[in-house]
Image 1 (cartoon, one colour):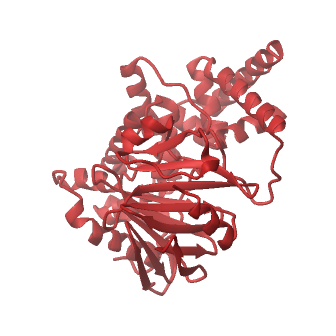
Image 2 (cartoon, chains in turn blue, orange):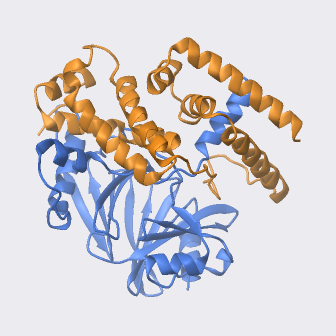
Image 3 (cartoon, rainbow over the protein chains, first blue to last red):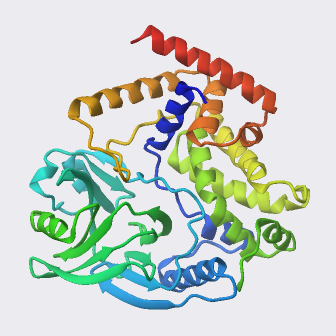
Length: 234
Length: 185
């Protein structure tokens, strides 16, 4: 492959592609001849079915069990015996459209909480519900995301090798999720449509609650560094 | 509920016999690349999502015509690409691609200096702009082969052209890109 071809491949990996939608439910509805229906009443059962099917498919001769739930604000962290297969390379980006802060706040409908280091950084908004900023901290790139807390707004699956530790940020509850491998993230968008996205998490994650918002910090920071950055978020 | 993994051929056979759960597994396995293909060809997130949905519905109904034992992904991408290109034609335009403002660090990456980061960003933006100026048939070949990292066979299937035509389009597109990048340092 020539140098130009290699540059094109590298460029493709850094394109700002939109979040990949979950189309399977809509495809099945159409093939079964069912009319679209509101997702919320059935989504929890559906999510559990997806988890169960994914884990069963991934483990020959065995079924995986859901080992434990951790609830925090609008997020649930579910520890499972075996993670569902990550069937596709996911875009590490896909944070959504970059917008000035004021416009981002208008889209998501709440005032953003940001650390001073965010400065005038653009705020990425995903489907009107999830706002993210990319900041530098301790020489690392860190992604801070926030969304309005609502039951099961976000669900993350983690494997047995990942540690989930309760922490406090400004006397508010939080979870420090350390250790790796792909996580499966599911969430509701503002129209209550169910979305599922396998993502590869680059680093550890701090989840915490502030008022009506759930915040999420992702990056290769130590726990102490992540907690310190979280305390600067106002 | 499936108790053990089936390979894709097994899933296709089940789907042919009307097993929608088997088709759902196939849809989940391919929806990511399907969406990215559709988006790069039609340039609209909403149109791409619609194109992918329609493609998976049409593909299921056309399974009887799918050649047993053939690779499924190129066949699916062909249907997806047709749907996406139909929407591009109907819309009459395509939105320009954009680069992520900030990429994640990769393990082991050194932190670049601000100057190096700026130069790298400018070079990427120039290259992307040059790709966007290519004629559609050249741009589509570049998008499939390099941005999506499809094989030549998959690129040919997605674009509905022969493998030799893929090679010649890529060759001409690369030549144009080289010329343009040299002209505008």
